[in-house]
Length: 349
Ligand SMILES: NC(=O)c1ccc[n+]([C@@H]2O[C@H](COP(=O)([O-])OP(=O)(O)OC[C@H]3O[C@@H](n4cnc5c(N)ncnc54)[C@H](OP(=O)(O)O)[C@@H]3O)[C@@H](O)[C@H]2O)c1
Image 1 (cartoon, rainbow, N blue to C red):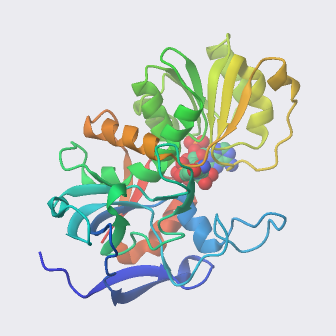
Image 2: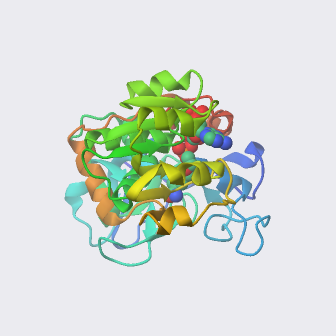
């Protein structure tokens, strides 16, 4: 298929509310050596899209400064980390056999080569992303999913939410048969945690609220407690021997309340702070019990490979809350911010 010279995108030229997301017609990006051009078929939204647009990450020593997660954002910026699509052309040095393949892009920009590198940047933040008809990516970060049973919108749901979830589970060293507690379980990362932990034969306890509890149970949680009531009391009733791993995107008071639930040698992994990022806890609950508090940002290349294998085998099935056309990106972000959905919100160019 011939690639046009221009493409439609939704981009931001400054930080602000949903109105700073505007339509533009821009040149299709040219390819550097080692890159491929992907025609985007679906791009999933994440909270980082909202916070990057708002500049809500603060800076070390200045929590109110307008900033992306790694520092200042270069404008204009095309948002969108989570892309599924088809390779339409390849740059110098890339195997032409990739053309036509259905792919998922690993959106991380890593600090090093090798399987255990750390993400220090993200597509849609430190480089242009997938709120567009086309996007470029390094060929080594494009994963062939042509034979996966998942649909394109489900593939797009994988990188950030499932990558983060798998990163948490790997860093928390979750073993089969262990009991795990998942917070924010109806969200993008939370549902991924439930599904992957279940696929690992863990006993999955989840925290959710209201009508979303049924969806979390349907995604594979053995038990779901209601965060509108006393979470610790409910968990103690269900798991009187405690939990092995906490997989937490909420933090805040849940950390101080949840740490005493850990068994000896337990791990509490934090990847988000929806409930507050200032935490006050009793360190005796760590050192007297050989417990570990672990921070987790996204995934490593090795985690992403594991994730792609799970998706090729169809062992996970992302839940799609709703889809929007690309030009309604601002509406889609507002829908995400309302947090009434279960699963992932996806844009279709
Ligand atoms: N570290 C990383 O690499 C990384 C990567 C991706 C995301 N994250 C972070 O992980 C968090 C979750 O992301 P997501 O995309 O899964 O979010 P999401 O889709 O918006 O879902 C979050 C869920 O958490 C629950 N929740 C919301 N506010 C809460 C509160 N104040 N207290 C307790 N529970 C609350 C809600 O579920 P219920 O109503 O059912 O409880 C909601 O559905 C965000 O903070 C995000 O920034 C981190």
